[in-house]
Length: 284
Ligand code: KIV
Image 1 (tube, rainbow, N blue to C red):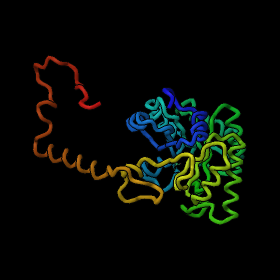
Image 2 (tube, helix red, strand yellow; image 1 turned 180 degrees about the horizontal axis):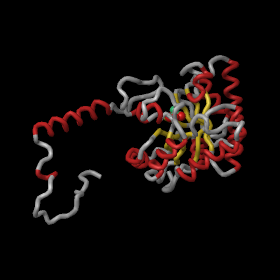
Image 3 (cartoon, protein in one colour; image 1 turned 45 degrees about the vertical axis):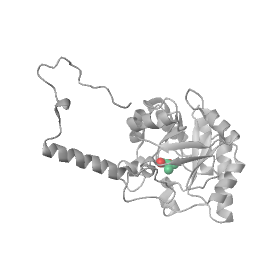
Image 4 (spheres, rainbow, N blue to C red; image 1 turned 60 degrees about the vertical axis):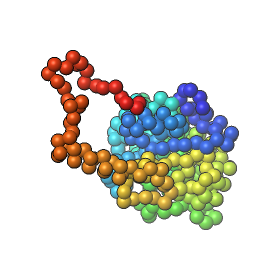
């Protein structure tokens, strides 16, 4: 991997070589530093933020201001990964290309992202064309598109059956033709995702779309087990942090109550020669 920021051209080369691409969501600075340090190729400031960070029951309540705010925090930490910001519901449309361009400009110029992601099939081609013509890389997103949840009628697998499958293949090709540098396939049958991945020259990034996509994206909270009571079928828990965090907080509460924290090393003497409030980090 290059010792510089990943570009959309690197991603296409990875597809050509058959190297799988990884992408995760992230919404804050500290976590972005960790993600960037392990070589994940793309960080997505997804509008899933509304659900996993803010407790909404859908992504529809997320605003452009919210996503730009969190993208700034992530961008300040991510020096190697390609930073992609979701454009939220109502901030882009084929019926309002100036609005779409203004929203995407904020993601890049204010947020510090290198690309944006928009949801929708063929009808999004003019939006993609406009943004790409303005120098803004765009990632498409088809299949289960949570911003259209009221049109779809629920969080359901998309593209089942010949007709629906063919429609998604055509949509993916249309997005590529319009200039998308990659396409997210969410919750579509694995065989259909394989077909789309073969037909497209740009990478497909799957979530609930089986192993044949050119890359995978996961919502960080799902893969780290931060949410106890919800586990989507397409997510794998690589860690279960919720109990560990609970245990740490219980330890802290117990030590404060028993008087064992803070210990002398956490406090300052009157005659301390060191004025510094920091201490060396044990295991950076
Ligand atoms: O908002 C998000 O996290 C996403 C991913 C599920 C692809 O769009």
